Image (cartoon, rainbow, N blue to C red; front, top):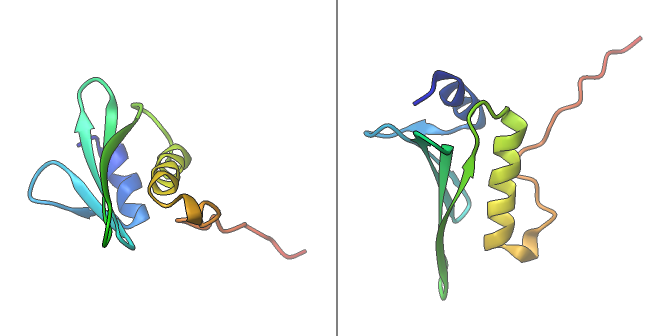
Length: 99
């Protein structure tokens, strides 16, 4: 996996797997990040609920920044849970300097 992607994913809480991929769980949604030679980074999204399930993928282009990865994850989460559309997976801390 691209070292830049690996560092970005680790900062989000992704863990290494036995393969060239990384995994992250948010509630009942599983994200597996896999490098792709043409598409950059592919996120495999899996959700299994009590009466429904979903499995799909989305991709993030090579050279994408951390914000783009987070936006792709949030869009995927909203696809699975449209009722939780306002929920943020990650909170961006504001850097406030006191005068």
